[in-house]
Length: 112
Length: 112
Image (cartoon, each protein chain N blue to C red):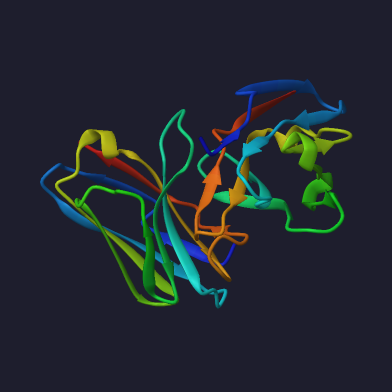
């Protein structure tokens, strides 16, 4: 079945530590790929996107993501996490049929 | 401020009530969306409008009725809802369907 998988429901990291959030998708063609962040009680904010070209994309707030076609993955990374990064993170794919599918989300907790 | 505004932010309604959610985008986008976000579930795409025409309806119950009078406004009319319809309802817009979406802050709906 076509899907977007975020294997980690909840991740806790210490402030200043590095972060990697995983995302895998299963669609026939390479879709458009996105990462969004959601703070409590708020809507989703786009962090970065991949349509084509360079497989390493830079986003806002110091985030980056790497598209790996062979692994059908689009993992989100940040070298040094700040307390303000605590939020819910969603991976999403845009399909050709006017659809956009989201993963179930990964909740990030940042320890002082 | 994402350029997508939703009202009201919070809504409590009885199962026999009729209410409407409103979404307005100031970005000049051509596509608008309604999503439902429930606890511990992925975002569910409900409706997609492209150039004011509905292009996607993911088998949403008829107690939810969308309306898109122009490219800047989107409504979700609610009637005879069930308690399980309580959720955060998110509106989004994008330049074209399935490209990067900009989200409103959502309407927290509680059905009693």
